[in-house]
Length: 250
Ligand SMILES: [Zn+2]
Ligand SMILES: [Zn+2]
Image 1 (cartoon, rainbow, N blue to C red):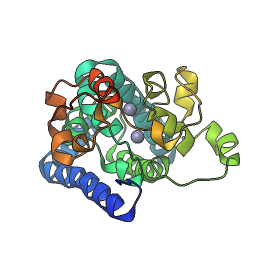
Image 2: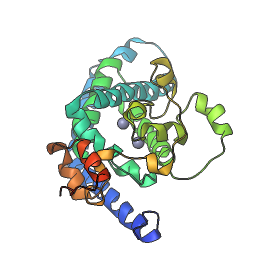
Image 3: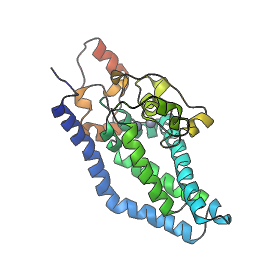
Image 4: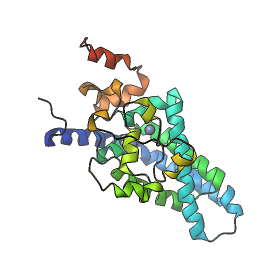
């Protein structure tokens, strides 16, 4: 019997998710440099709100991290709202066996075309710099590894740090198959954004609740299928077909 939680299948799962990181790294040999050049140009020309403020650098650094997280919240929320963006973003949500390696499962074109462009626009608007962007990504990756982990952690953290920061239980709600929960808890570091903009939801999530109905087939969990999935039309009818034991599509 297929057990997705066995060590062998976890290894295969990790390998598939690492292929996303590998493809992003290859594309970033070109695109990361472009993004940083744009931000450097904006900074050199003193464009953006923070350049008008006579504040100590460390304040601007902390604000930079907060502002990158705020704009990522809105980009993420838009990725759930607009069908074209969702076609790419659903690759991240497709993982029915979420663990820390889901951190890597993003369509590389989403990261480059949507998030990297968003970072440049954030720098143009707020005057945030590359150091705060690097610090933001450093913190973001630590949060992502924890948020997607399949480990249990003490519940008191939800009622203390979880009032301000994103906890794994918050992000598991975001990975719930039920669209009412998928479209909530968009924040990456500060859960405050979901509280302020009224997108916070709370529900107990079981392992079998994770993923998306339309990807709940073993052949739709492979790297190659997921890479081409934004260009395919998939809908939730396929999962209904599965429930009725009708033949599955390739
Ligand atoms: Zn999402
Ligand atoms: Zn996630």
